[in-house]
Image (tube, rainbow, N blue to C red; front, top):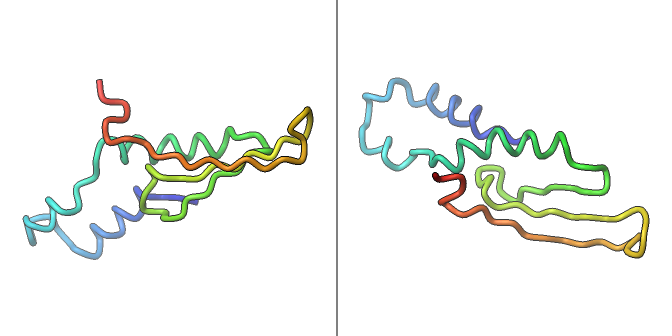
Length: 94
């Protein structure tokens, strides 16, 4: 579904070798956070229960997404709970 890595590969293929314009390399650098999120978003979507749904308003910004939880049992059954999640730049920095 969301493939930042494939988009980056496609952009590299369109632009050709990196030596063509060094200024453009600095503007399109991918942060460590975004590299980690490519893998973790795929894992998240695979492991979410059927009562949860993830929405990415902008597929190029994996650090911002919306989570909708609709419980199918218990006190909150039938409810719809929406969360906006933003992953900080310092995500997983050790």
